[in-house]
Image (cartoon, rainbow, N blue to C red; front, top):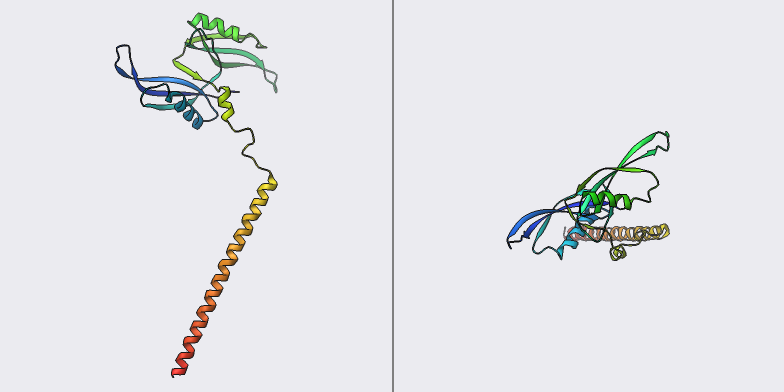
Length: 205
């Protein structure tokens, strides 16, 4: 299941008169964490927005799915409700979810969300459809997923971890012994020097 993050971006945008005007726009990014969402939005917009821009806010979105139709890029937010039976109590409970779909207007968005959800196993209602301020959505593309490390890539066999720990312990033990030996040698040298000075004093007396 995708996790969507809503990113608000502020920058100077050129209007129809050729003048720069500060604007704040919203983008939806598919990511696994806030940190990755920030990195992805900077990467995606870096080649699109001329000049500097600032990501002013990132928040986890309540959007669960998006449906893109190529004939238009205006996003509409649809509220979906349906009833399911609770697995433990058996009682019915109402579930509310939010989805996005591209459409020319609210009426078309309403029709398209029903079309997109036609394979849903339970009956549902769409009590609310509104035009969304979201400018663009950045889902994971195939090339993006190829850049991700494979599952478990950062995991290592327990035997390998234990062997490395034993090597570290052995190295630490040898270092401690070396320090002890150095201290003992220094103490012996100091003792010999002290005895030598004492003997000299006795001979002079």
